Amino acid sequence: MSAEGPRHLVVGRLRKPHGLKGECAVFPITADAEDVFAPGRAVWLMDLEGSILAGPLTIERSRPFHRQWLVAFEGHGSRTAVEGWKDVLLAAAESDLRPPEEGEVYVHELAGFAVRDEDGSALGVVTGVYELPAGLTLEVQGPKREFMLPFRKEFVRELDRKDRRMVVTLPEGMV
Image (cartoon, rainbow, N blue to C red; front, side):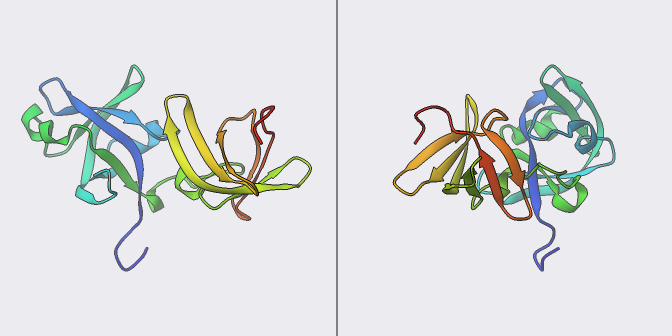
């Protein structure tokens, strides 16, 4: 915890109000949605610049709904109470989240990772992370030019969070 308070990580995007009882449709940006959106958990509203808009909000109830979650917050029991929250982000304190397991990282940690091929040759450094329609994509600054690498299991073979490096298999003709 810093002097400014806990670090908050995005765990979902509030899509829109759902129904009349204050539920919001939330698109999860976490692999642990069932735990993160459990009743009693605290979350914050965050704008696209990373500033906290409101919170902590306590989750009163939640349930999976298609590819989203329906979440209701204590003290916000009507549609009008949550109507202004459309298209803002939902964040949780990093200390409240399950730490990444072996071979996992938080997306925000990927920038600065060294990228090597399976022979150990340096390919570059991750300088950007983009959420594109096809999935998460890494921008890697290589020795001659930058290239875009899909963040997928068939390409990213190993992640070492402690040493901030990854081993990849590049698609044919990538560099």
